[in-house]
Image (tube, rainbow, N blue to C red; front, top):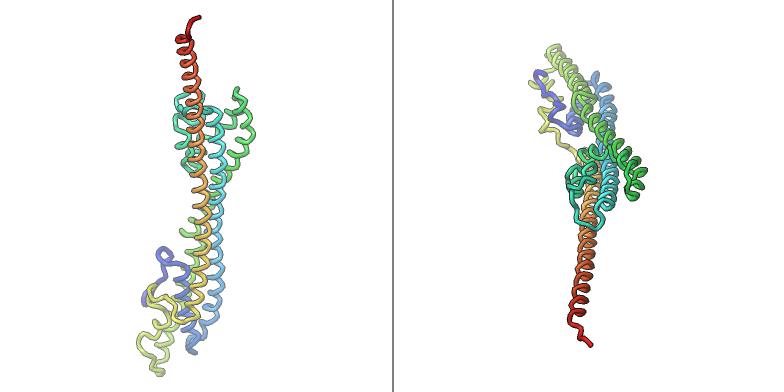
Length: 300
């Protein structure tokens, strides 16, 4: 708007907008000439708070959906390892085996489970049906669990997509933009009225820039100007940061646990294969030694 800075929803945060509002509200309350605009600016505070809560709720919904996706992904990973164990046993993993193709599609099990849901989930949607028709008892026994895990993963994936879409809609042209538009309209009305007041009352000798002085010149000037405002801003940011760190820690822990389980499983398979090879080599050596002993046994 001409004459004063416009709040931009694409580049400014809600906290920045609150700083703009707080400044204008305080300035308007301090000047009797601006009294007609006090109620509207006072009411905007509650509108801002409701939108801020809505924004946090959208972010929390995405965080919760991400956590659910990690949980479901872990269930699919565990199922993948059990199917791999049933297919390959203690033998070396051979992805070219015909029996493994329908499940892993030519990928090593450790690579197959690496994506979080996504391609892994797409590849596993057919598993419940495959397992229910398996002739190998160890695979057939996994069919009921596969149905539950795949269904849960599909729900988690859809939930994450929906939560992300809701958050994006909120940020891009939704309720958040409406708040910025409402604030800009509020400022435009007050600014226009104050400019008109200056022209209508030359006897007051109001200084140049009087109407402009009720509004911050830009987003950079929206930092708190009092200890109380600074404390409130820090409290809000710490609350948001705390939630983000908690979600980050939970997701990082689950990811590390998933990777550790995968490595432990592969190490166990390798150990089992090595033990069986050692056992086979020992039997071969024993047989060879027995044959040698038989050949060298003194004749009576």
